[in-house]
Length: 161
Image (cartoon, rainbow, N blue to C red; front, side, top):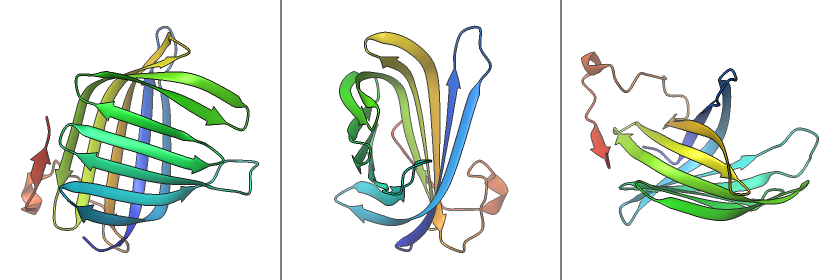
């Protein structure tokens, strides 16, 4: 995959007695593969703020780490089968976030990458929701395709499961 990529991040939260909350962002970024890990780098802008947060995602077998610095400061570790705690600092204050991760899967082809994470989210030690994140990465200018479409004949590899 080339260095310049498009990154689509979709998050879905399932809360008791409430409708699903679905969020998607798409941004330009950079992709690297080093020492057995996939790296994604991109800037994330928040509404009403001019300064972006610099985001770095590291993916390797059974793990994904999201680090944000700037307007938001956090290092979120998603490790399959483990619960992790972290401090999430925002312009509005900080809180403790718990991530109880069930699944981290990464599927890679020569031109694209797909990561899926299922976890339970806690804020200040209180359960908030069950969540699903899907990150799709493709070469900038490349066509978007379904990773589960076997007819395309893509050479793909699952990492973790």
